[in-house]
Amino acid sequence: MRRIVVIDAPSNLGLRPPAPGTVPGCYKLAGALREQRLVQRLGAYEGGVVVPPRYDRGNWQEGDGVFNAAAIAAYTPRLADRIEHHVRAGDFPLVLGGDCSIQLGASLALRRIGRYGIAVIDGSSDFRHPGNSDGVGAAAGEELAIATGRGQRDLTDLEGLRPYVRDEDVRVFGIRDYDEERAELAELKIPVMTVGELRRWGLSELTDGAVLSLEAPVTEGFWVHLDADVLDPSIMPAVDSPDPEGLLPDELRVLLARLLRSERCVGLNLTVYDPDLDPEGVAGALLADLVVDAFAQS
Image 1 (spheres, one colour):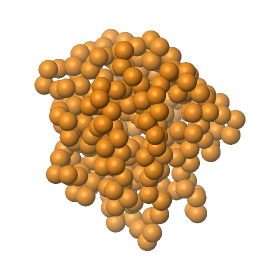
Image 2 (image 1 turned 90 degrees about the vertical axis):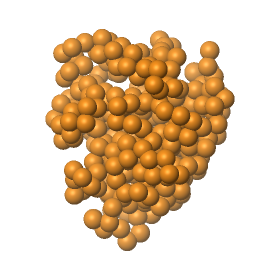
Image 3 (image 1 turned 60 degrees about the vertical axis):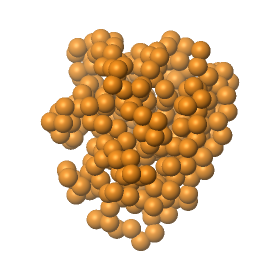
Image 4 (image 1 turned 90 degrees about the horizontal axis):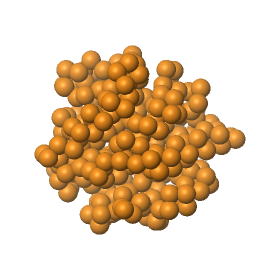
């Protein structure tokens, strides 16, 4: 039985301000889930906090590339150091974000060790990059593109390890059927299972098939990246992009459990849930329950 180690990565560097003069509240995710006694319920061990730089976009303007890029480039290797230590020790890191840019810490850590895949559970593909969009800026909307080597070099080639994840080692679950980058992912032969496809062809069957492919001998394992906005906003409104037609709790529970069940799954990160948008804590309690249930079924 692998030891679950909880690491806090309370970085909001990759998201746009929700309103002028404010900062994204997703940096409170770890604290909110700890209030739900997530660590105790999982029987997990403490992995500490990797403190991020201050959120400060300075004089950034549209067209300047990724904002907070220097801060993200400094934070990512430090988070990678912590994750790498635990993966090498045989632990199972559970990283509590933060926004989706924290995935880069996991991807860099695993790239240092060898060749690993990634299972992305997200309401959007987060695949914006200069080759397909004039609107790059927020790393949390671009982190899968960055991890696969697309984007500005100060983020895509940390430590000379570009790409952190190969295209063929990526699997994407739960994006909306209308995702703008879906066609490009298909051209790149990156397997994508939208909400509609998961329901149409069978969530369990598609997930099990994807897990088998992630367990291919050419890789040493895979990481799971979970963005809370994969859930329908009727259930999870406390995210920066509450797009309709998302997964339901039972669907996410099955999907996550089947990924975590694999002995080749080496870690999990949670992102984007914003306690500022959930004053009663209802959505946070649901997210904690889903994670606990998925581990229990794995």
